[in-house]
Structure formats: structure tokens, C-alpha cells
Length: 252
Ligand SMILES: [Zn+2]
Image 1 (spheres, rainbow, N blue to C red):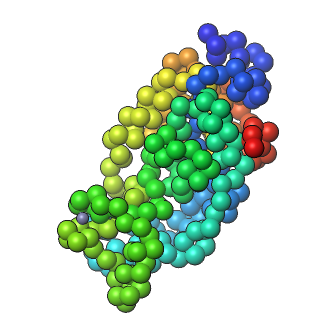
Image 2: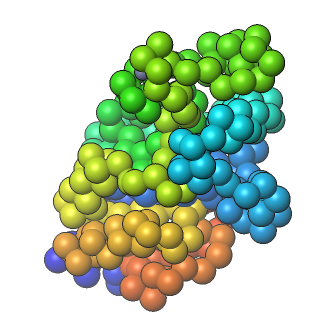
């Protein structure tokens, strides 16, 4: 098997050069150099501000107002974030035809901004850079929502159909997107190199994908500042800075 051969001379460049179907799986760690904090980390926003549960969003105008208030506060802080070295390296591999699709836990749209087509970015937790109506799925841009919000004394606007408008993210208590989960499984099962980048790989379903890839014969590389539960079964583990580790793969 490809994976076994590579395990002996486990080196990121040879693994990447030898692979034909690379599936990156990215978490918050790839975006921290872009100025977007890891919300789950100690000191992150979620340790100060309890996340709003999906049911509370549905049941309370106040919670919807609060949710949008927080979103626009975030926009002012991180709205101008640009792709980092990790995003650009993965986009280079994508352009070279080596990456059939990319799985991300991030909601920041930075893979798309780095040049990966939206259809090839599988977003397990959705996307916070636009909104949709929860009833009719109509898309709304944040600028429009903000205009309505600020023009109405900071009240979350509703869709013309009467449905609630929410960022296109998967909230706590909201079910995982079925299509994205399926696509992510297919990608994990059908790759020869799985790159887990900047994810602690703790939260379900993140934890399942490296195993799936490994069981189907792929080599597994983990690049993360902190150790993960899967380090023992990985073919290569780098506890380096993600930008530093991936910068050599950026092709301009
Ligand atoms: Zn609607």
C-alpha cells in the first residue's frame, strides 16, 4: 500500500508529492494567523459569551437580536480577515489538481477567498459570511441584514415569507448538514493522503474522518500545535506553526 511505503520516510513533502488525491481537513488553527481567534479555546469568545443555542434562537426575538448584535461586533473585528499561508498552500495544491475537495470546521469563508471553488469546500459548520432564511432558504447578504437591523432599533429582520434570517452557520443544538456530512465521508474514504490541519480532532464528527481515511488506506498527516488523540496512528505529526509548516507549498 501507498501509505505503508510512505510511513518509513514520512516527510511532508514526499507525502504530498506522492499523493494524487489529497483531502485537507481544517480547523480553527489554520485561521488564527489571519487574526480569527479559536472561539473554543480558553479566553476565546465562547468562554466569555455563552453560545446561543438553536432552540433559543427560534424561540426568542431577544435571542435573535442578540445573535445578530454579536455577529456584527465580530464583523467589525474580523470582517477584513484575509487567507493565511495555510489557506494559500492548500489552494495551490487544489489548483495543481491534487485536492478533489476540502473539509473544514471553519465558518470564515477563507478557503473560498484563497481560490478554492465553493462547491469543493465542504463546510461542516456552515458559513458565517452570509445568511439564509430558515424557512425558505433564501440567501441574504450581511450588509442588507445590518442595514435592516440598525434601521429598526437593533431588531433582527425576518424574511418576506415570515421565516427567521440566520447566518448560514450550524449552531449548537442544530442538526449537522446531511449533504456536507455525506460529501465529507466520501472524500475521507477516497483519498490517498488525509491532512488534518489545525483541529484538535475532538469534537464529533471531526474525530471520525481521520479514522475513515486511515482505514481505507490513506496516509494520515496531523499538523496541529497541540497533540491530538490520533497522533499515535498518524504517519506524520507536526506540532509546528501551521503557516510555517505549509508555506513551502505555496505556488504563486
Ligand atoms: Zn423565507
